[in-house]
Length: 368
Image (cartoon, rainbow, N blue to C red; front, side, top):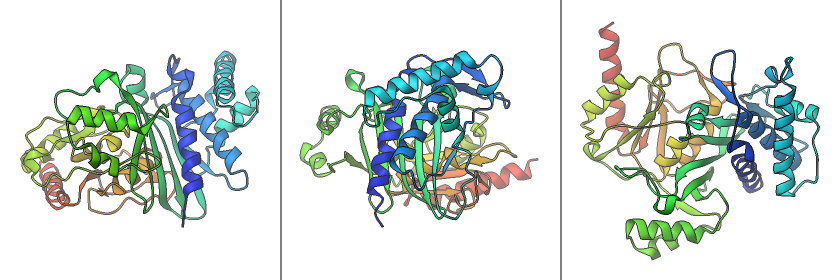
């Protein structure tokens, strides 16, 4: 079954949200769980919701992180008006729909993300600003959007405004000429592709890669899909040559446990710690070979933190499982109830990685 129309809409929605003016300057608030939320979070969720409802009015269900509860409180009117203006400016600039939204329209669109998901029907899954702390610091963040069809992820889009167009592996994590902004996208059975987020020519990416890595240009020309450049995970087989990603925030992953796993594998490179599902994007194009996310006991993973990222990696030839080796199950609602954490790598390294993870978890448990 083809999801080409849905993928095109997802790319448009995520790109529009990623390029909104709210990302240039944004007020930061705190939610009840003390996590930050910005005007950009709300504006992003609103824009994605509007685009998807315009494109698929007959069948729309959205599982998303934010709601309008705090925006309906006394004293929030000025922020709501700012969000409304920013959203309307983005829609006007895009010019596709010819609509102007009221503040109540905006609040209702934000609240359209209250679906619980599940194993029946189709559900869009959105994190409007994944890695909000990274966004606030000016580091990595992503707008992530996926589609579930009967509980299976069938497409995913990662819009990563601050991710360089060239590899972030090694000491130099900056693109030549400061070229940043990547859009990764994948459809089940169709591979994973990358293009510049600003919609500029794919040729620019080809030439950047060609000049930066001094590799055969014809090789990259053969990989050009009419959407972008096809990417694949690292082919590294020796764990000593592998590098690995983990969450920037220690609350999201136990860095000491990751270090123990890396030691068992013989990994020599230090971990690359960045925020958000930009890690999935970097890994799917081979910037690193391993991603470890091993949160503290009691933490429940949300589906919007992994749905889009998991399919861009698997369609690029990678493997994504929980710490018990089971595929991630997105059919149970908003949460991924699973064993311990998430491990990601290529198919050749997975047996070694899985063994190191299990041994490390057993050692940690015996030490308590």
